[in-house]
Image 1: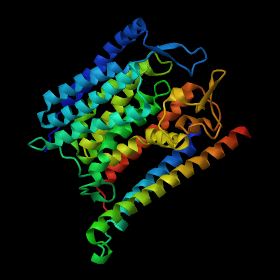
Image 2: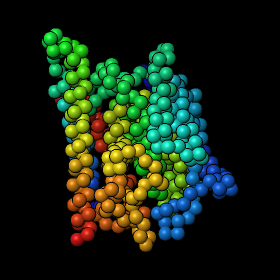
Image 3: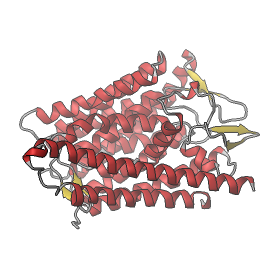
Image 4: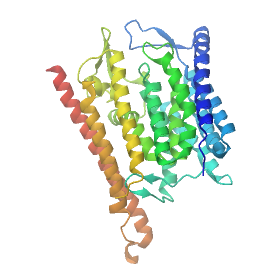
Length: 338
Length: 81
């Protein structure tokens, strides 16, 4: 039984937020100096923006998680497993940002991020229990083989799905912040304290990072940020036994990835697409109506007509807020049996 | 925000159908009794159940994809009109 320590929760969230506020301007300056910057192609003048701002999220979330591990020994193994998965994904993302990885290699590498979770479940006194998901309206399941076959996807899918949706200013931190908040709320209402402990560092750093990444972005997250955050959300869902809640909270990201891949019919990098999903015309964004353009969430929203980037981002946040609310309802339904 | 109302309805429908899919796994597939020995016994049942679940999940994904394609066709028609 894990007891709730509100001081640990508040201090880890606050430390992450303050550290992100302090580190991000340094990362921005250093990246300009080192020339690690990319074009913001959705702006008419395509300005240069530093690309690996996710480094500040990685550093601050790690510090926040270590504070949780020190203040709440009962969830220490969970925190360390999460931190290992998070840092593995961040390393893969950093390598991709600096050197570039083929899409298939990147996706395959993110699969290994589930290894720390498996190892944590094998360490005595076995405080980390995975493989016993509770489904809404159904109850607990005992999946002896299938769960372990699907486990590698539980971290790799959210990592890559969050990475694929990080294409517009502020979308990644805002939507992932909402998903983290829904996991926190779901943990509270279902009594899964592990989720309540693991999410505050993420919530603190994403809330602070949003200030720098929102429209007009002063920094991009890079794969180092988006892969790590996606992997962390997947890992928290698994460690807390909130797998279905995690799927629902990340439904916009999963929809974006699934419908894009179903159109293109292979793993791809944005830069290698012959048909962009979104076209920039005179300061507004339009859906590419070509049937071979990837059916991203942005393409779907813009199919109703052109929008500015700021308006488009509001639509993303609205859809994410809806799915986060549905995720909390899903957590409440975990106590209901048909 | 009116822009995303229809897409929000699609997402809510997808969520509701996901819950139904999970209930179907539990109520329709899990209770399937072990096949008799001459049809493969428990081993065949162990293979059949995940295959049925996979078929049901594929059907759900297909329905989701069709719904999204229908939405996009209608939205593009509204825009170009």
